[in-house]
Length: 319
Image (cartoon, rainbow, N blue to C red; front, top):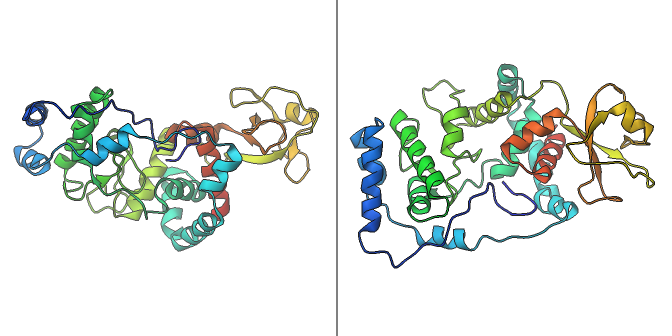
């Protein structure tokens, strides 16, 4: 996931790796992981395959210690994550997979456009999923990091996934921070939300588009998605507007309308009883959006207003 303030998919922060640790310390760490996994019911043959030959990955350490931080305006962020090429790709992807997307929507009540929006932002419609071994990445970060407990937990979750037989250790690839497959689920999210939509007995978010789409839809549905309701819409705000904005300030559209807020085409809102919040991500004079409950659900996937706006706009472009 790409957010405005920190260009990363999630808050993956770990302390600098201490290279001077005694030789064999990592082997001791892995032995501890193995012992814990055995106590938790992971089969020995799974552990043999998953943990054989892993070592602290220096590239992961480098990426973790040098995470780029940028402060982008919404306009800059939008230009970066929603170029014309991605908007066009969203339309192509939607029409190419509309049959599967429609079946997923019928089961979970999540509109295809939003699934496309998340898929497009997370992995470029499946093109960029990360080539790191998830087991090695999580072990590296759990071995010596500020969030060692978190990453050790995710490592144990990843071993449970292997134990379930959904993917092989070799096939379990993802980002340097352990986000997996086309929807970029962390292992804990995978265990909670991934589904076997194609019915082959495995939850394969790496290779099966039905499983990818179904898993994203299940995530949103279980986080409270409201079927048939919009995430938000661009709006016009009068230059003299001085009212409160932000997603925590919700009012009826009748109240917003009384202050001069209008649809982007200048017309009045068709439903004035609906409650919404007014966002002006770059402040007065910049783009403005009225956002609704489904916007908050998108933020459960990534707690960034900019990310949620981009998902919604990419979804709008898809169909």
